[in-house]
Image (cartoon, rainbow, N blue to C red; front, top):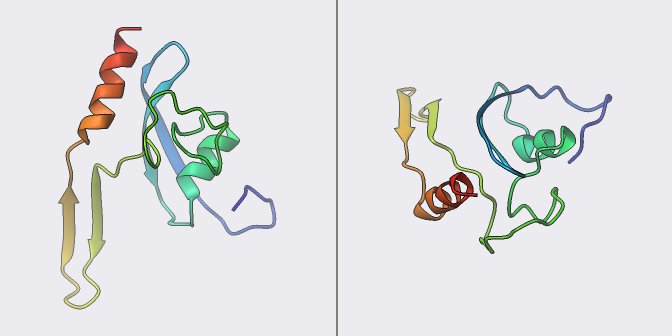
Length: 105
């Protein structure tokens, strides 16, 4: 996956929540759902995701498995019932720990 002028349209919005020494905590919202969209777009603009071994610079000071990427909420129509679904999930403990450590740097 890559940013390509001849590729499919993909729209990602982001907002800076907090800036740290070498890292930035972002809130990201997508309008489209392309494969690896968030990871590709953020890497393209210089905000690679911690732990992303495919699209980032390999930085993983915390040795996490996977990416430091969390879906706080999802909203979609149930494929069978058509009912609108809204699901929220709390931030994982490892993610909270990293944010706390960054705040003390």
